[in-house]
Amino acid sequence: AQSVTQPDIHITVSEGASLELRCNYSYGATPYLFWYVQSPGQGLQLLLKYFSGDTLVQGIKGFEAEFKRSQSSFNLRKPSVHWSDAAEYFCAAHFGNEKLTFGTGTRLTIIP
Amino acid sequence: GAVVSQHPSRVICKSGTSVKIECRSLDFQATTMFWYRQFPKQSLMLMATSNEGSKATYEQGVEKDKFLINHASLTLSTLTVTSAHPEDSSFYICSATTRYSNQPQHFGDGTRLSIL
Image (tube, rainbow over the protein chains, first blue to last red):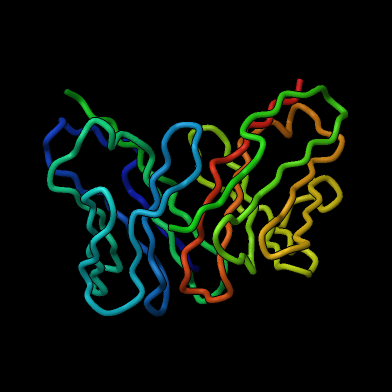
């Protein structure tokens, strides 16, 4: 079955530390992959997307993600987090149709 | 970037009333719009897919007569929660995209619906 998995429900990091949020997918081919961020009470903002080509994609707000076909992963990274990065992060994928399949989300908490 | 406006941002109303939520794409033509429902601390649940000029396609378990969707133009879709009850209280989010599947969905800021 086609699915997106975010193994970490909640992650806490110190301000200034590096961050990696995990995302795995299950699909027989390479899907279109996305990372979205959601602040409390808000909609979702697109951070970055991967369709093909260079497996390291740069996004907004200093985020990047790397597609690894061998691991069916699309992990989100940031070298140094800021307090304003505290939010819910969703990995999502298009599996050959117009619908977007979301992971369950990872809540990021930043401590001073 | 692409902007999607969702209105109202918050609604509080009595049980039995109908509530309409609007979703507008402000700077692009949205051939397809999506309506999601999000419960606290959970991911988004797709309710329906709406293509301009066509009837909406509802996901399994979503009542068509309860959640009326209209997508009459390339910039506007509406979701009407008919005869709302407390169990319909939730966070509703719309998104919009263009025809091609590799285009990302752009999301509105959501509507917090509270039924008393």
